[in-house]
Image 1: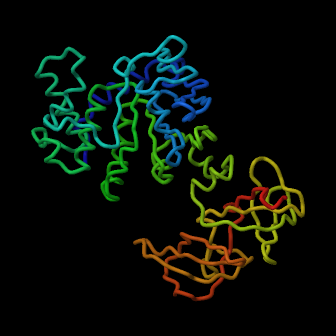
Image 2: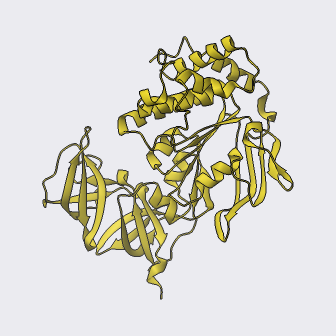
Image 3: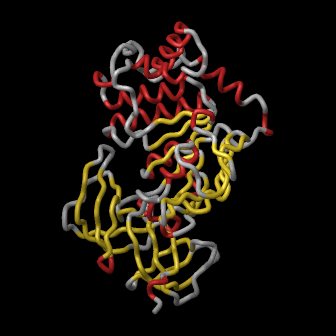
Length: 387
């Protein structure tokens, strides 16, 4: 789909926002922010900075605090402690709380939040109600925004006449039309089927970057987060445990929780055996497995360790990427994925590994061998082995 004929307004907004150079204040600056509901602490002492034009994704499981943090940024919730600035203006802090409509932001909700008695055009135009524009200009901008999200020609339809994906596109157009400096996304793709979710994910990333606005987007889906983000913030039980580029989060997780939540094939247990300054050799039930020590420290020789294995680190013996060190495995399951197959295998010690890729289907219960790439084997001290 071509956006060439409908993007001029959004490109002008982007150029205006990027004209002031590197002296611009942070789009969002969160300092020591906490939010409690009675005795329950939902978010705890969070510090977070979002740069102008940056796409920040907050990633975490249900109950991690990401929705509460987003609602605090939006002004829907008032923080219990800490301060929050948007584009250099303090919107929350001691004695200060600006309502959402005074924060120069727009929000796209998980459940669309469209007015059922309004047409698509009217829903989008509602976001312009405070701009003091005449009816013709509101209509022009609403049509432009709907065309931008691929809904040209559907302006007169009501939400009940649109699919879920189309309703979410109306909600996106409503967020874009007012050209805010900050866009907030509350798991906007979670109610869509896989095909529509992927299409809209691509469009969200492209349109937000074309607009030049900063974005804060929450999700529990690691693949979605990595595909969209300039930076990812991982939350666990209300604490922001790591912030960084998707590549650095994946390659160098700050904790076992981050490693697990961002995608594993499986885990192995063993004993640290050797270290050459980069990779450590671990004895796993008589097999030697190489990996990278995490957390900036190297386990002592003889210390029990856990190896968290990325899916990309596992290769069947017939794969040209397979290394010389092999581990016996039994195939428990396989699933066709279009590009090839993903397998579930069982390796030494009865440990299962999932999502092991190959271009061919391996038969159920067949015996094979796999090798593990050292770069994708993340070594952590096994503190559960100590009494």
